[in-house]
Amino acid sequence: MRATSLAIAVLLGGCARPDALVICHNANCVEPADPAQDDTLDALRESLALEQAGRPVIDGVEIDTFWRGEDGVCLYAHDLDRDQTPAIEPANELAAYFARSGPITFGDNPFHVFLELKSHVSADKSDLHTPAERDLHAACAWQLYTVIADAAVANDRDVVVFFSAFAPDLLRSVIAQTPSVTPIPVRLGAIQGVPAPLDNQTRPLDEYAGIPLDLVEFHAQWILDAQYEGVVSAGLDLAVFMFSATAETFAVIEQYEPSMIVTSEARLIRRWLER
Image (cartoon, rainbow, N blue to C red; front, side):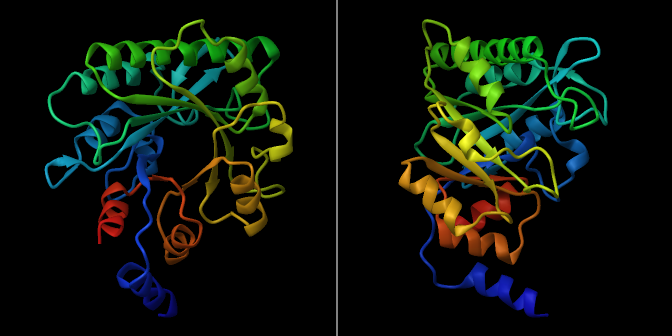
């Protein structure tokens, strides 16, 4: 009962509205949230079609790429629990989206594409890339960038691409393969999820030393004041991600005022931001 009351207070209270972009988490932000549809083409299409007041609900989308180590294939996937799709397919969907008429974001801001490179290469999250696999995965991510950038330029769309990862060495491979010309802006992001020992993916931010980060993305339920202060003092943008929003999620957004909210519940977050 207390949690419900807190949620209502946060949703309806008079706090200042954070000025944040809404990014579609795992390319699947159609409600009710169904993680089984994460990183599927159907969910991506439905998410891009979401509208409010005649404009898209979202300001961008997160696309996961997964390097399957057993056969060296780059996939559009969050994990290996379902049928897999070639990684290039969501880039083709975004190219078609940029070619449509009308606005492609809720506000007058660039469309943000988060290309996340997943840090493991099998169903076992401790099965990490070899150096050669890191390079191949980075090359795959750049292929997606090329399709997205070409479509953005051809259709005169304002688009920015963030390469993001839990693994700093994957970002180093991305940097090493940066082409001589990047037609649309490229940014780099570190992801901070559930900390050890509860999960083994998140690496301490000091392991990203030497990487010119632009953004740090935190799990909304696992962000500490000291982490926030470190990000702000470094002049980096802050994003938070979540699956299902709770009263605590809204309180975190109010407190830390992230520049981006990566969410599986786009309509809910948009209604709250525009309240």
